[in-house]
Length: 436
Image (cartoon, rainbow, N blue to C red; front, side):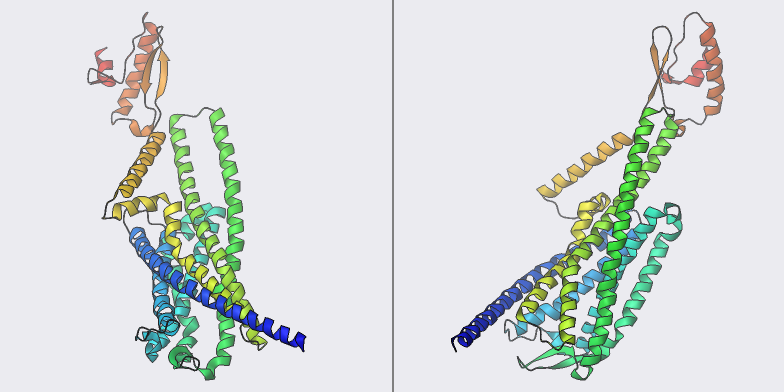
């Protein structure tokens, strides 16, 4: 008798602790969701403005990121209208008609349909640009054919069409009905479709969570492996170039190729970071969703601890969408530059940021400027500075070459070497050669 009493009291204490934990997680999800939705929507709108600007180079990755920013903004707005406003009315007992989705049948159907559509589209666009970066890294010669803005727009359009067609069942199966526990109207799946909707949700969940997460993980491993290998090879080539002598024109050509490769690698690393963040922050939600499905198949009701964990996982799920803007700012310098120019307001921290970017620009420009070669001539070891780049030749370069050849012969025959600079007293070297 005492053992039964002790077990009953311990079960009651456990249930009470589970309910308290669930209430704490509910508050945490509510306040965190409001902050993340606001930050994510502002960041998505700023990202659309920056990526659609003419001051940033339009490439295939920008097309994917513009589409994803637009989808994320709509997804967060739909989450606010559906989940946040419903939580205000149901959980905090606010007697105001804020939850319009729960009060209107057409709005309920549209909200449920768009929630399924936007989630599918957002996840598969991450998969699309992850696969595109794999092609860029492994098949660089095919980049201009397979990874151009036109091809990216077609892929985004195809993903949007599939995402609008696949969850069409949710539009017809959802409606407003009365919640028995709280006696309030709520947008949910109709009871007569509960069984078939459960199996359709398993298929949809695998297509939206399981396959994208596994594809992104495998592709990122291959991409990072190739990037590290290319970085080691580039260091070896750079060391080899330092030991050998090259002409200035060939150096500029090699530096231009290396610069383009580094720019592609920066974009690739940024997209790799985005896809890794997607996998990490969606994985807890995926695991808890899988556990809930298994418990539902076995006929077990969800426990308070499982509901609490799902609420925390939903916060990480929203954090995934809100972090995109900050990942763009941190990992892509061209994004920061255009964002600074797009800002209309000014403050001390913003001016300091702008000055820092200008200093970095000046440093890079000085490093990329062509170096002048020094030619030693004459007994006094006098130097002649000349630019050997093809781009610095003047229009009368062919005539100057012939005169320079005759001038070399004249200088060798004369007892005292004559030193002629590129410009002396405002005259060109060709005119001085004619005078001599």
